[in-house]
Length: 273
Image (tube, rainbow, N blue to C red):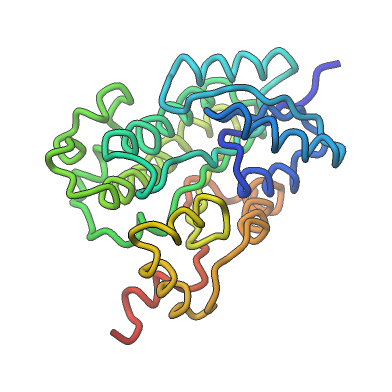
């Protein structure tokens, strides 16, 4: 019997929290570049009663993305997308961050948008970092939103020589994610589907722990300590927002990005210096 199908990209704590919240009645295809990560998360979810299949998947590869879509379509229509994959500034080079976080996400939203079922929904995880970079020009924002995916990395503002460091690359990628969500939401709407983004702050995950122990660790710890919340968030708090966006309660929401950072960005701009 055909089922609704959820594609989950990135076998991390945020992806799992969202999938557990809304994936009970769906076939879940869980993809990660590290198949061991995917199999570990799949096992946890299967033991909780979810129908999950783990596959190896590379977000930076269009062919790998299309293979994941093909695998999902073996079971039914693609009705849900959760994209929680990405590289942090402490994990990779400028080029790798732009290839995975920026280009890969753009391709994923484009390819899933071609097949998403009517009343389908998608959410991609960006970051508060996209809100911390100085404003781009309207023309630069438009280029990030609308440049054909295979030409994105050729844009002048994304050439490695014009990117200061891996944090700047990450910020550019997350700004691009938000602009692509706005543009792709219009394409998804032609199929009767919705697409949004969530921009978390410091959420306790293995990736965040890498950051805490990396060269910017003190900066990140100070960031959440000075925020109004006074603490990092947890994955289930991100899933709370995803549940709103991906159920009928959020039927009027598409093309939007929701910042969930305990007030850290507010403090960054307007807090005591």
